[in-house]
Length: 227
Image 1 (cartoon, helix red, strand yellow):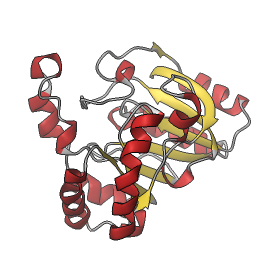
Image 2: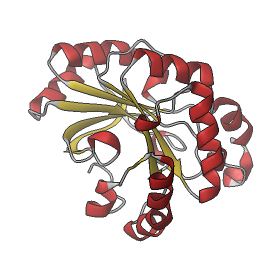
Image 3: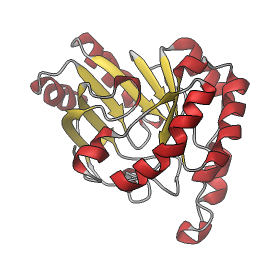
Image 4: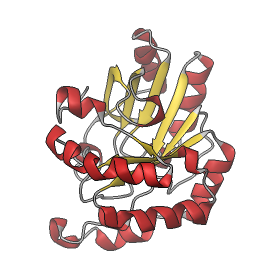
């Protein structure tokens, strides 16, 4: 598998925020979000090929009970099926972080699904050459329905502005998601940007009955890799 990085930190987002976790970040993505905070796995994918045996050994070496398979987009890699099976056999709690555009029969305890909104489409970045593909691929309700029916899940939306909310509500209704499992998280790669968006996003969560998610790793370390 092409891996960008493996590191031990805390989960910074979603329902398991604060839980010590080993992150296995694959390189490669079928989308090109304009605000992607890991461009080294999407816009300019980097990393090296690592065997599943070596990945499992390195993860187990940290002694943590939680592992997060993230990206990039791990669900575009067929090897994710075997990797998650091996990690579960080793006794790990597994979170898979995905945009929910592709289905793979992976093994996981929490399917962390982050559907990409219209605000993610890169109309201007790199001359807009990825915009049409991104827009075509970013939303697959059939895949979302299958993932939410087969796995324990959270539906985590990256929110850039209050105008995103009607689209979010439409997706929640379209796939029949449980509102208690909907998580709204402000977009931003600085503590200042996150605090500014949190001011109105928390109020919207209170009105709609959705969860608010921080980005603890940004609050603690800033926009750094491997934390």
